[in-house]
Length: 302
Image 1 (spheres, rainbow, N blue to C red):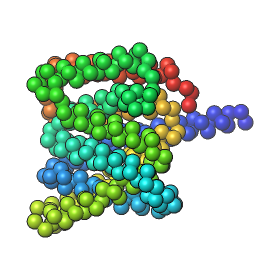
Image 2 (cartoon, rainbow, N blue to C red):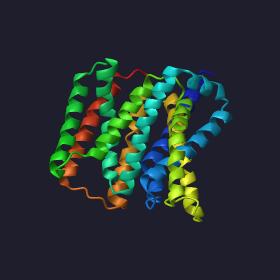
Image 3 (tube, one colour):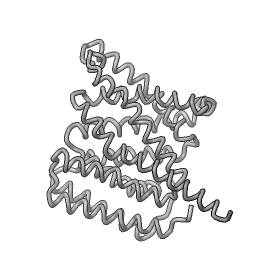
């Protein structure tokens, strides 16, 4: 009988790893491939469809999981609604830049953004949450900054796509950290807040004849509808994985997504990746290794 709890915990961990792997597979490979199939459509239209269909998908899950009461509670709280409005704006910026970047041949930069993001989170924690940095974390952040600077000097401009993605998602995470709502409820409220703007924009495209959807191309229409699933599903799987796994485990697994994006951009789509890029990414990967090692040494068992 003594092996029962251990077996239960092992099963919980296995399920958590499967959820996390599914989420990071979606973000690293399936989502960019999905948007590549929609490359003929302007990024703002893809974003608008993503918002509308994600809202419907999230609402369906809210009803299925019987969380309507929690959704109403979140909407009726002025403070929560204001904060979720800010996070909605941040995630909309992140989505728009990501969609544009994927379909404009900048997958390598998107991967850079999400490699930088964990280190930016550390800085935001210090600036806004009064968290303390260990010496290894300071070194990691400085090293990552050097990597970004190398890319900027080599290309003649800062890697703005990577920086916008990292900053928008970093501040999004900061806001969501201080809003006391469940992940699904928060995501649903954010989507619903953005939906009126998305619908208004789509109405304009239909009025001026520039709309790409519902013009007789059933395959394209289906791909647009599925943006709701590809947006909501990995977020829900990630939340399910995070509930079952150590934070240190999630921290390690999260690098799978930008690794997939990098491999996809270089190997599948032939995006340039020269020796200077290798040096810059090497510095950032070294920074991540230092940061992760420090986090693992100081992380509690749960």
